[in-house]
Every structure is written in structure tokens, then in C-alpha cells.
Image (cartoon, rainbow, N blue to C red; front, top):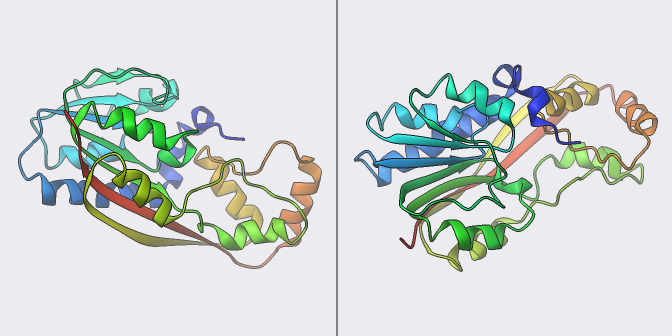
Amino acid sequence: MINFSKAAKIYDKHAFVQKTSSDYLAEICKSILPISPKSILDIGCGTGFTSLALKKFYTESKYTLCDISKEMIEVAKNKIENCKCIPHNAESYEFKSGYDLVVSNLAFQWFNNLDAFLGKILHKCKHMSFSILLKNSFEDYKNLFKNKGVNILTNDCLSENEIYNLSKGHGNVLFFCSKEYDMSFDDAISAARYFKNIGANITSSKYNQGRVSAILTSHRTQMNLKHRIFFAFMEGKT
């Protein structure tokens, strides 16, 4: 089950890929927008990695942090001085128009209808930059369960072409690319613990946890988690 709130206090100690992708997202923004935007909205801000990375470049910007987890926002707002916080589900929240830059790092893969959300948010901003997990992430881990007849996914990530086409359907894509980040663990249980520590346990609750634990325990060799991530920078419609 997904539970980011429980992981808020330990998230920063384990979310290495999430921090690395935040830093890269910030570099993309800086390369395209060298002058500080007046206002920045960080959707799915988590513990503030992306806003903190942007703040190194955009020192004069006003930051608004949005996350479904109040506990995550509590951690984030202690890193970003004088920020505004929106502790809501971004998909259902009606944001005000006029943001100069909207950013989102590794949050969109959890959305129920990304197509609809992109259509909504791109009317609220001048520019948007985001990263999102791709469909072929964590193949080794998923296959461990698939080979036992268990589908562990609680969500179904999109392919690179699908995300690009969705984005292109709502605005002008100025930049896009995909990157891979690898993490290696001693065994499957350690990999599962990583997901739990960042609040993103991808094992479906409909399966008996005893069966899931047995599958994890049976794999005692190295487990690789390949994060495949799509990055984009777009023009908004305000």
C-alpha cells in the first residue's frame, strides 16, 4: 500500500534516486529559464527535494508546496523559508492561475488521470517541468512476483511515447528525455524495504501478505531496481 505519511521522517535517508532526479529537474529548469520565476508551484513536493534544488538558482522566487501528505509538507516547509503550503490531492484541488513555473518530481505516476490533470494545470502556469516513472521500471522486482503468478502493481505506469503524446496534446514540449538510475540491494527483502521506507510500497494489498513475504524471502541474491524516468519541460497556456 502507498503510505507517504508514515515515511516522512525517514524519507530523506532512503530517497537517493528521488533527490538525484530533483537535482536534474532543477538543472533543466535553470537551463531554459535562467532568470528566477516570480512564483513556483511544486506538486507532490514530498520532503522538498525539488524546491530546495531550485532555490539554489531561483533565490527570489515565491514557493508554493503541494502534497497529499501533511507529514511530508511539514518536513518540506522547514527547508523552504516563507513558502505557502497546500496539503491536498493535486488532482482534485483547484489551483489559482498565474504560476510562472510548475514543477513535479516523480509524483505523476500516482495520478489516476494524468491526461486530465495536464489539461488543467497547463492553463494555470507559464511553464511546467516534470519527471515521471516509466512503465518498464523495476522489471526484475516485478518479474520475481510475476513468475509466481502474482501481479504486485498498485498502479500502471505509462510508456515514454504515451507520456510524450499526452504532454504534446496539451502544450508545447520544449525539452524531453529519459534517464535510468540503478539501485542494487543484497536481496529482494531489502528492495521491498526500500519501497516501504520511501512510502511507495508497490505490493498490492489484495494478496495475502504471507504469500508476498514468502516470495521475497525466497530470493536471497542481489536485486536490482532500475528506475526509468521521463523528464519534460513545457510551455503553459496562461
